[in-house]
Length: 115
Image: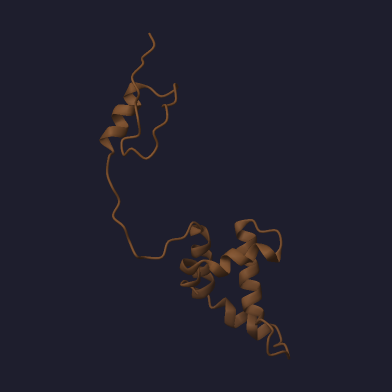
């Protein structure tokens, strides 16, 4: 038997036809989880795995150790060795392939607040 009844998202954000693979039990379950999240002013990031790594780098004081073992560059516009290496480690942990993949790390305010 084919039903002509249209079922929409409980909150009404997306009014498209439901997937035929979902059963009525699934829709009943979705209706029981109808809750709203409050808004927040806290910093959020999609890179939660990098926050853990950045926190570990800070707790172990790796920046100090790196700067002790790598000589300071003579240029006043050069990056410190710890800044370069920490950013490279975070980028590689996320799957970055080149230095251009580190741009989004510098723009992520939630991640920078961990340093």
